[in-house]
Image (tube, rainbow, N blue to C red; front, side, top):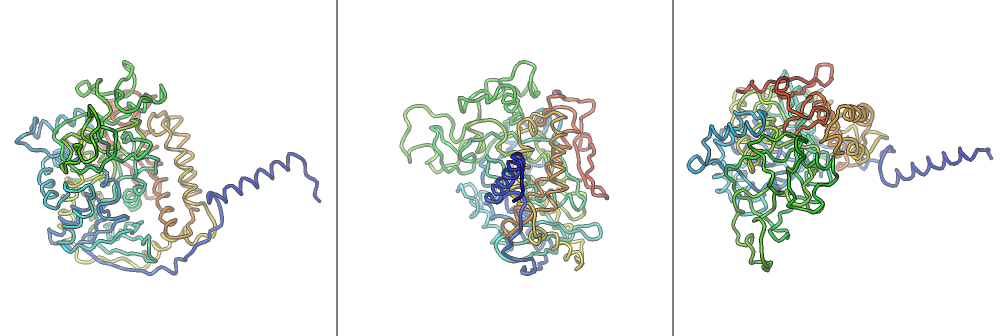
Length: 584
């Protein structure tokens, strides 16, 4: 028997126990034991004029309006139509009615600009308000406001137009040929099928994404569309901003009535009511004081020390404002029995109701990794939702339109913006498709894409997606990294993220189709984390939902600009400024 010292014995025992623990949890490095092989996958090729990727509000209108414009349309979604992404949890839609609004259209656009400290794109702000009434009227005709569940109302116009819908397919690649988009590729989550889509134009309605936080249930949103587009040369924007939606620790997306009980809330409409909401005030309070709302809902949202914390324009300061409540507002008196409460009347909620998830413990982080709606995504080159890649469009949270700027300015504008932009993108993509005679994708490119899709499945050993995702979350989600920022800490986090990108991402493994999906989602989140940290380091100021302790004030001399990100020819990530004045 070999003689070993006590120190060596302890080290070897600890190492063995550590590996055993990792193996028992199915985490970390390990041998891959796939239940299928890539050669078992059947290839299915489909062709269309307009391919819509995503089945939320933007995807619905993109498909419907492209079909109405005469194009052959196909919709593919990672989830179920109307039941995936963040669409199912949105309950308010902003409707601008010039006959009743307290603001004119010009006044509304100007007010959003003041609230957002100039970060909004006034062209898309105006577009959203101007077309809101027409889109809402169509939704009323489809029965959208009659149910808390959206699948049935979404299916009606799609079925009427015979638009094929392919659900539960993870699209992993956009395909570009001769400088223009030529389609997309992905795989079924349930069946052994590879999908190759040939399309004259593609509309990304894939939403934004988070880092799979323990909060709002958006774990199927992992920046898929953004990263696919970035990989073929599209410009991306808005990665430094943060969504400040707070949420309960339990049932964070639930709707609550005035007595604190959950109920199924039907969608309703909101009117003009501009705020400067869901920034980093609460995260700042948590940073300096600990949990600022240990007493629960109703605590002041902007009770910041004088001269400290994120800047809020004087016009939009509401120091007596309370955390938004769910449902019908605070109720007094004895709790009535079920069936006799306001939400039981079968009517939509009153105007101005807060979106779900905004009651309870209001500390931003419920959707960690996501930016303010419409402030991140592909950079538009015109008012038609077109990207810098010919034939590639985006709508909703996949388009960095800055419709509301980098702060939450108008309740209900996000869902309305998705409907409006989906319609605009659908019509534009259909018109573009008319100019394309035929789409060709080389067999060598298809083969290369299939190899990339199934690389985690074919890997003999590697890191599990669960392990790498958990590691990424521990690096990027802490309040002092993602929300209350300092350069030295962000640079330290970036070094870890770059290690995941360079070493762990190429070694992700998958044993089945479910884990293959997780592997691609993990890779997308890693690249998005790199984007968020680099953009946050570059923006040496604080503005709206971006707050830095080392640069706590807005810098109007140097930062009247958005940050765009693109992939250089050598594969490196490049960042550039785009002046706010570009769209004014």
